[in-house]
Length: 369
Image (cartoon, rainbow, N blue to C red; front, side, top):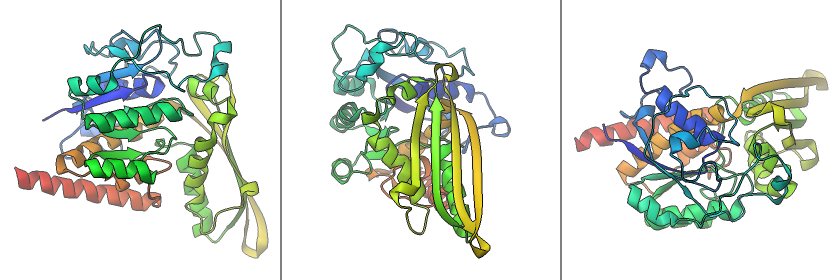
């Protein structure tokens, strides 16, 4: 079976969980693959993903093999597969641009970024020389310029782009057109978690609606201790993140709530929580006879493995699109795995559309054989 040649922009906690997972599932059978939404996608299993290039700006990662870099500070996610083998893939220096929030210099080195004293590499050339087919973007929240830089580098190198961050690329008409015209797949924007705050909030909001309950107001507050939460202490970096998460919930309602009745977004940074994210969710509504109903939920989850459960499918479906010559935004897998896709389908519809895309791809591949 052919490999899926992946490049990674941002070797943080999410990249660490993804790469650990690739190795973790290599020797697992279909009966022993807890945590996967799909064990096999048209012959592609998690172990068929091969990381061939990586970019970061941290001195503790740049110049090191990616098998070492994923465990370097400030990464703090759970280590569930510590024996990732040497890959022979050196992490290259990327451009800093707006990837580091100014306030982060006030925090200990073990919790924040330490910018390497090196000039940035030629990202396009690295992508081309590595033979990468897909570039996945893990820039910090608020990195508008950095995300657009890597999106353009993917276009210039003819590489598919998966945007896991809340900067609008796949869901932006101008960027979507660029990928469409080049015949290059793009998936985005802002990765969901398998069982995270957004998917739970969406499901409960739809339950209220489907059962005739009027949702009057709701909030979702999230706290955590990884670099993402530290980065988001700068509120001016949160605009697109709040839009992404709020629209993901509003989209399942018959009519959106007024802005004063819905609040969704990060709340605070608690260092000792590390990569554990805690969500506090409240929903207030009315049932039969206008009688009030209140729902409160607390969700605690390791943030980065939770996102990798969706990313592992987005990568493999993106590979199918490459093989089929499909360019532009991939609507099905974007809606299934992203908070702010170009088209926001209900979750059960998105799942059906992805299954149909996989089935169609299988027929196309078998016909070629």
